[in-house]
Image (cartoon, rainbow, N blue to C red):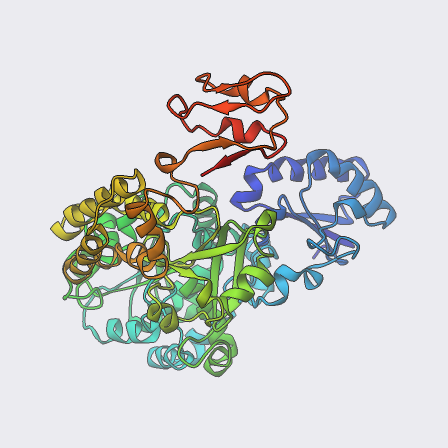
Length: 597
């Protein structure tokens, strides 16, 4: 075994890769070779570290120095100063906003990580996801060994039941109960399916786990297969996730070579293999029955339930389906015990939850928090608050199936039941933050537009009902709303929730209902006053030049329709009849003299 005095961890997740981390890694390799450090310094391409806003990220151990926004041209300095001379390159070290004078050196000192607890993400950003030996070094496949040598299938199911683990992909159904139902079905062939079809806008939790720790998912699938009596597993993953797919396929081949997949695993007599199936990016295929239809080569449409997959699922055989994050927790539950997992989180929502934190937030990225953490802690302590001094307005959880949560609910604990009570849902874990500039009517329109576009069209409530709702919302944001529109939206929403075929259709109206509940005044302003309080909806906007105007003529030069007139050093005027409301003048004005009203 080789021993190194230093390890350079370079983020290889999708976010950092798109910002050039691959070129940074190659530059490190060249510079380390040039300086004769190959036997002393190891370069590791990892998965996502979580703090995407600071990417590309490089961490150097044993010090744990956290370098952020690293560029290719910074590599030479890091090698010459840090790796050769042992001196930290301070201007590249990440520093929390408002604490720039403090010299943060490691993850433990960064506010973003202090309130997190990483279970599903425990190896992401820590190991090389393409090296099975590194996973094994971090207790990888130890849980599987325990299960196959010391536990009966019913013992495994009971452990998962006792842990309180609930499905991390939607409504939070108890995972152990799902396994129990599938195990009880009698059949010669059963299947274990991993749902990695992550379709919510702004969500990248499952993708990041597959990119950073694919063996954890494979290990859990084998454990689940043993528990329910399945011999075949499928990972249904989006073809839009090329890095995740590549690393997953590498992990499967490595596991087969090590005898951890295939025939007679660990000489236990248990056979189980895993295969990858690529999805074309249809949102509806995140619904389990549509997903199974897609794996079978059929059109991805939901099927009526019952029968449930545990009775009649993939290829008409009993099937268990869990999403990526759910499975990533399983090996740790087996290793540490049900009581350990149950001690984290709340009484009804055990463990942790991974969120993709995005939108109007300083620290965009991937976070994993104990259940029960409040929204305020996530947004202001972990997320670093709202950029540019803007006021927090709302947060959308659960994607198109979830709802918008307002300031009055900032201190509620994040758990399945509380989110449902206030009109939202946990969903897979997208969390989009909005500030005072967001129009909540237009936010509802945006999510419903997505749902309409992604509807499979199989059932009338979803196919027609959501279309009618979208038409009403489009009229409202154009200033064409009329009395009774809000009531029509509520009526349609309740009917769709009660009659749509699948969970996606049933939850499609949630963004509309939640924004009406918490921001009804914005709907009324759009309809009754033909005004957008957030100054966002273009059709309801007018631009005015105030007394702050210096007559610099910068706005005149950028107006594409010559709607602005005025002489030098005098206040200018906008012709509302000509103005196309493009906003170019606002962006160009250096004096803040143009207002949207």
